[in-house]
Structure formats: C-alpha cells, structure tokens
Length: 258
Image 1 (cartoon, rainbow, N blue to C red):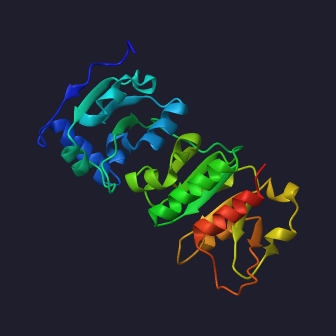
Image 2: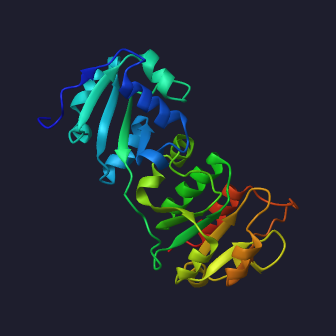
C-alpha cells in the first residue's frame, strides 16, 4: 500500500518509544493520562480497524514483517518492527502477538440518553468487564456507562477480554450514580431472589430496558438500586445462591436483544 510508512527497526529496550509502549501495556490506567491505548493481537486490532479506528503507531514482530503491507495498516502515522524479545516485554500475553497498535481515544464521551445502555457499578474483575462488553455488543446494546470505582475499561486486560467489543460501543467512564438519571429507557437491576422472573417478562418489555450490573461481591449500590424502575431475577432451579456477574449479564442481555 502506498500510504504505509516505511517500518523502522527498533531493537533497544531503552528506546523511548519502547518505554512508552511498555507503560501503556502494563499500567492499566495509563491511558487516562495519555489519551492513548495499546491494542494487541490480530483479532482485536482488526476489530478496531473494521470500526474505523486508525492507529497512530503499528508495531510488527520481525518475522511478521510481511504484514507491514496489509491494507488495514496503511493509515498508521508510524510503523516499527521489533524483535520478539521486546514484544514479550511489552505484552502480557503468553505468546508475543504478531502486531500491536497505539490508538487515540475520543477526547470526551458523554452519556447519550437514548442509547441502549449497560451500567457497570464498581465491577472489579477485568475478565468480567470484558465479557460483559462482548455480550453488550453482541446483543445490540450501544453504550456502557462505568460508574466511579469500576475497573478501567480501556486497560489492556479488559481490552483483551473484550475481544474487540470496545470498538462497537460508546464507553463512558467515571460517571456518577446521578448521571444515570439522564437515560430515557427504564433501568433494571438484578436480584438473586426478588423481583420479576426474567423469563416471565415479554420480549417487548425486556427489549426496552437498560441494565445495571453491580460489584462482584456487593452487587448494585443502594443509591443505584433506588433509581431503578424494575427489579428482575434469573430463576435458578439448580439451587445456586447466585450467578457470576458476567454469566448473568449474558442471560439478561440476550433476553433483551432488540
């Protein structure tokens, strides 16, 4: 591709660019200071590019240099090639990915009141958060609202768990509980043993709901629960006390698909 910058070979771990990549990849909240995220692996990179996200920088492994001609990388401002040892230092994947990208986050993201939304209330586990984003994107939700205290959603661990879902969603972080009141659709919260049985609700009803999902141990806060218009439970005939929040989210969001 004629637009692709000529890849520059970088071999020193003390190179300032490598230090920056290491910081973005290993500090989960670094993006909040820099406004830049590290995206690694072919699948997640391709998902971002397919949604129109353009990289500032694309990083290739030496033995994947042939990928430097792929069309998806043609708009990168800069392209570098690094040895596998350096990629292993940057990445936390078990095997060094063949490529990674640095991308700019939108300057500001405000709540869109009309968007179909999932509210995350102080979730802590990156795997749970990423899984919920995947379910939200798969079942037609448009917006994720993360209240203060929720794991950093653009951190590398959540990005990996999300498997590209981030780039299909409007993500609002560090929101306050009262901000949720701007949403136009009814807000529903879950309970293990109280509220309406999810499977007794009509598809018309569930398709109009926004959902709030709470902390893995504490659940949704009392303040957020007070704002909810509906409380819903997932029947568990097997007699379990509760479901993992990501598993519950998948059930709820599937039932609410438009």
